[in-house]
Length: 472
Image (cartoon, rainbow, N blue to C red):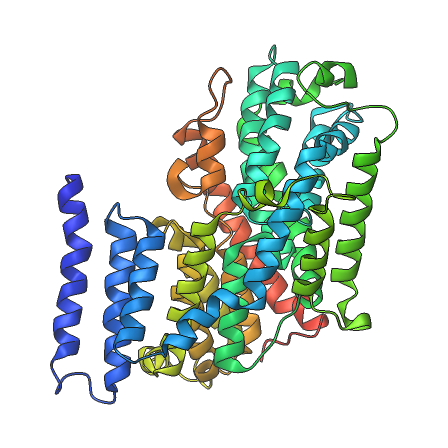
């Protein structure tokens, strides 16, 4: 199929659906606002799938169409940019810029990996470091950019063992994507999920609550995925030979000191990060919102006396297109829920008496795991899937929080193709360094896709109920 034909197919499908929705007698029980919402969603989704138009432009156009037709108010559309979760992400990026400026992340990574004496230890110490980075660096693309220099330093030290370099190239994006679920700021999709749950079901999930539910899943999924990467990309002989990485070897490829006492700048950055994370994790005790804590931290990080980065420079690292995309898709999620479109779409599903909860959750996990093959943007997948999942959960007698979290966590798997996620694409093309091929990704995905789905389903059915999120 030629590229032009591949783009025309989803567009034709969307236009056909819009034509069907435009006929008043068709689709009984569907209100006017719901018809408009479904038409806008169909066009936006097909544009995301089948056209090269920028995702943010499509989302803004969809939000504008919904506001112009009166499905949502203009205040609702613009209020999403002022949402506390958006401010949380902006301030988290400022904090991340301050931490990255000091070189503290490279020092911490060197401290961990130099303790490895075997290939398996190196893999799991690297995995642990990447999981912890979810607390300091928001969004998967930001963590991938920060981790790339660490990978390049390791690749230079291990250049005589190219198979290990390829394994590490695959390990970094794999863990970055699967460990994002550890924190609320780990991915923009999480903020969309929280917003949809509040608007549709009146359920609020704060930073601490998400941490309690997501961190155990992130740790288990990341380390099991690390084993899958190790076993699918190396041979027994590669794993049998030990490794010894000296700090001096890494220092030759780093511009910042990796040993010795912390500089005053590094010490201030470390103290600030520890304080902010501690306040985030203890929100139920002091009742200060995570967004306000992040704003205080960002002001301190950019202050002339105590800061490590200028505010203008830090704001330059904020991915504003991502924030606009999130705001627009949040508004789309609100429209899908409040117009009745989501409820209408799922009204034909079997009810609670005919579908056991585990089967419903299994279907949600399977669909969310495979959705990256159609929608490459994780935020776009959540904006489309989560409102439908929340609406369908009510009819199936399933807790909407459990269903929404399962869908969002399963969407963290997007490893099938280099273009499936930005971290995968970033590590797939590293000039001068051996890295993985599409065939390596497919071989890993054949193992990792069912493994990830089973882990998420297992947590939804057994672990999360123990942590206060029952299945029903």
